[in-house]
Structure formats: structure tokens, C-alpha cells
Amino acid sequence: MRKRLIPVGYLFSTLLFTLVFSAVAVAAPVLPNFVELAKKLKPAVVNISTTKTVAPQKRNPHGGGNDPFQEYFDRFFDQQPKAPQKQRNLGSGFIISKDGFIITNNHVVAGADEIKVKLSDGKELKAELKGRDEKLDLALLKIESKDGLPVAPLGDSDKIEVGEWVMAIGNPFGLAQTVTAGIVSAQGRVIGSGPYDDFIQTDASINPGNSGGPLFNAKGEVIGINTAILANGQGIGFAIPINMATAILPQLKDSGKVTRGWLGVSIQPVTQDIASAFNIDGEKGALVADVLKGGPAEKAGLQVGDVIVEFDGHTIHDTSELPRVVAMTPVGKEVSVVLMREGRKETKKVLVERLKEGDTEEAGVINERLGMKVAELGDQPNRRGTKDEKGVLVVAVKPDSAAEQAGIAEGDVIRDVNGQRIEKLADYEKALSGIKKGSFLKVLLRRGNASLFAAVKVD
View 1 (cartoon, rainbow, N blue to C red):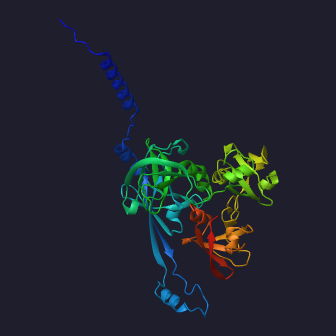
View 2 (cartoon, rainbow, N blue to C red; view 1 turned 60 degrees about the vertical axis):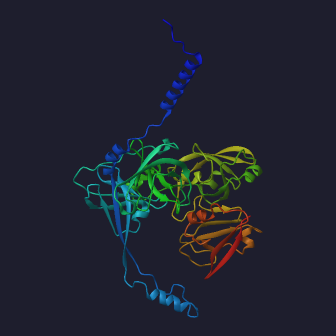
């Protein structure tokens, strides 16, 4: 009987195909079972509705009997409601304990006269605001229920990786218990929403009403709190890492507010030119632009021109990291601060103090291309004696800089940049993000009792 011969090349090709196919099959990602995850996790997600009283706008805010536009202002305000109005807001949240504690965003409940929570079974309960943190945009609520409450398990946001599957559940546009899925698109995003930005970026659909809702990993653990979306963006949402929330939860439960660490410096980014000038290897660290008198940094011997590269064992890659690390450091703890000074590495021992209201810990923003430094205005009067409620204060202007050439002076209050209203430093940073060399910034200033525009050319 004649034997059938199989060419060696064919055997090799078959074997190679089998090995490659097997490798691809093994490497193929396994999708989470979103159906089972949704069934398991939806009961722990709640819808939040708030009501607050909004006072009518005051008549004639611009004043001035000789104002030629006064008649038009009068007509506008005559058409406004004369009595206080009720304003309603919707958001999301999730239950973190059997005794009824709920996490959501601060902006969902800020200023609310009444907060109601609707459970997945349709039951509606009144909620008490136990604590809130405006800087992280977090709030802690409490509900009372005789029935057992489902709990969303908390994960570890430090362990997430770009590309892993995530699922969001919330109340977008009032559509209760909506489930969306996607991946982690990026980590450590700074979007200008506050001094401690460190967002998880995801393409799981997030819309108005999702605020405060949970972002789950494939194991069904909360790894983020859905907080923000990019205006006019598609598939770009941002969530607060859950580890940032759990770090302050004990304080919110005990006192209703958060006490943070304070170093007492103003900082600026380390650019390529600065790295060369200061003899630093690479563009990393935070350059100390000012040391506040009597603060922890001054007491420890830190100086203007130092570049902080490590704080309490945490490597400081850029300026956005230092405020977060300092803020999370327990008050009264002595930490090691590694810095570069005139090309030499030195270590200082710093006793972290408490950040007080009104302190501008690492909050001053210096923009070298504009040549000026601004800081939170808060409730303090500016140096020309006018007290403004909103805006950022110009605290220093570099001689012969773009800002000085545009007529901006120390003590001015910046209220608008290129049509973007400026109420705090985060707004200012956001307005300046992505500015291009040679472009002009239209800046609205308040100087004394007068308003004026300045056109600043970006160097």
C-alpha cells in the first residue's frame, strides 16, 4: 500500500499556524460580563435630587447715575423674578456602607436646602449632608433605612492601568440607572478644575447627571467617582480616583470638613530652559518661586530657586503633584524633602503644618510666557483697596514682560480671559492651557472701581 507523503514545508506551516493561532487566542482579551456586573452593582447606585432657593438678582449692579446704559440695565432687571426661586439639580451617588453613607460630588449638593435620594427600587429618602470638600469636589451624605442597604465595594485606584475595562452607572439627563462601558483612556489628568486635579480619563459615556456616580473596574469595584466632561468632547469623561476620596472620608465623617497639610511655598513648572539653567537632569520637579514668611518651608531652610524633586518619599515629576502630596500629608508629620540647589542634591526635614482657609499653598500660578504671577483672591482686598468676590489677583509682574507691556499691574484682578469667566485659579489655569506663541489673550481686568481690557501677546 502506497504511503501518503506530506511535505515537510506543509507540516511546518501547519505547526506555525497552530502556534500563532493559539498564541493569539491566549492573548485575546476577555470581556467582562457586563450583564452580571450591572445586575450586581445597580442596587448600590442612587439618584440624587436637590432643591435650593435662589435669590433674585439685585437691581443696578453697575450703579452710577450718569451711566448712559443705565436705562437698559433697568429694563433687564425689571424683567427678572422679584421673589426667591426654587432651583433643582440632579446627580448620582453610591452607597458605601450598610448604615447609609453615600459618596457624591460636592457640586451636586452645594447650597442645597433639601437633598433626596432615590434607591434602585424606587424608594425615596431624605439625605443629610455629613461633610463636603470643595477642593476635591466630594460630598458625604447619610440616609436612614430600616431595610438592608446594598453596598458598592471600593477598589484600589492606584492599581488601574490604561486600557482596562470600566463601567459607569448613573443618572444622565435624569435617566435613572443608566449603564455605560469603556476603557481607562489615561491617568493623572489635570483639567483645571481645582488645586488637586488627578483625574482618571475614560471613554465610558458620562453626561450631565452622571456626576457623583461610580466608575467600576471589571471586578465590580469602585475605582473612581464620575465628575466632569469635556465641553463639546466625545468619549472624554473624568473621574476622581477612589483612593483620593477614601483618604479624606474619616475627616468628612468626624468633622464634616478636611484638614490638609501646608508647606508654604509657591511653585512653577520646570521647563527645558529652566532645567538647563538650574543644572537639572530632565524636566521634573517643582521650582520654588516664593517661600512664604513664617511657613514650614522657611523654617526648614528651603529657598527661592530650589527644585523639589521628592516629598516624603514621593517623586515629584511635575508641579501638579506637589500640592496633592502635601495636602494628603498628616498635619504635624516631619517629612524629608529632597531638592536640587545649584546643581547639588540636598535633603531637608520639614514639619508639615495645617493649611488654613485663605492660605495659598502652592496656589500661586506663575506663567513665564506672560511674565506675571497670580493668586487666589479669596476674601482679601486687593492692593488697591477694592474688594472683589470673584477673580484672581495679580501679585507680581515681571519688568518688560508681555503682561507689563499690555499694561497689567500688580493689584489688578483678572476676571475674564478670552471670554472665559475667571472666578478662581483653576479657571485661570484652564483658560491659559494650550495657548500658542504669538497669539493674543483678551484679558478683562478690575482696577480699583474701573474695568478695562488688556491684550497680552504670548511670548
